[in-house]
Amino acid sequence: MAESIILEAQGLTKEFKGFYAVNKVNLSVRRHSIHALIGPNGAGKTTCFNLLTHFLVPTAGRIRFNGIDITGSAPATIARMGLVRSFQISAVFPHLSVRENVRVALQRSLGTSFFFWRSEKTLDSLNGRAMELIDAVGLSEFANLPAVELPYGRKRALEIATTLALEPEMMLLDEPMAGLGQEDIKRISGLIRTVSKNRTVLMVEHNMSVVADLSDTITVLARGEVLAEGPYATVSKNPAVIEAYVGTGHA
Image (cartoon, rainbow, N blue to C red):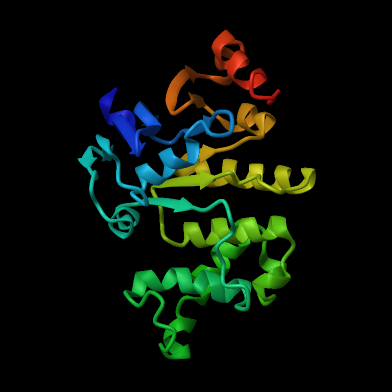
């Protein structure tokens, strides 16, 4: 069983001047699964994400990725190991084209990340792979369009393409459906399902229909602690989970 766990947190804690945003959280994510982290506003979901990728340093606890203790490692080191996080606010270069955005992400494979003065010829070698990724997320017709001109939902697809360019073994998605209309939600849900076929996904998401549709396992946080864990059918009927959501105005 242990070898099927790709990411594990034990006793993960973050204290801010006496306030515990995350308190003794234990989390185990199975390889090649889609695992959702949910909870009412202020439950500690994004803080937990920040701790797992070390954008925040835990007050206590340990984190293991592929059996290796990554506690204290730099975010860039963790990303190079294959644990890559996308952000809630789309992080793309607005005035570069879709292809150029993906190409910048691919520069890491040449050891020239963000060296914008590299020759055009050097960067052209990345065009084939860039177009593969662009096609995979359904953006082929937008390849030459500046990212700033993309509809919002397509920007989220571009963000996933740039994340995939880093060849992640595991993707952490922070509210991938935030701000999307119903059509875009269906598109991005399908995209997440597709890219998860040969990798692991951990996502924070508020849209419960998306969570129910995509997730193999759900961990519910409330006040920084794990309230429940399991498949949606079980978790959604848990009285403590229902109370946590209804009690904070979330149906």
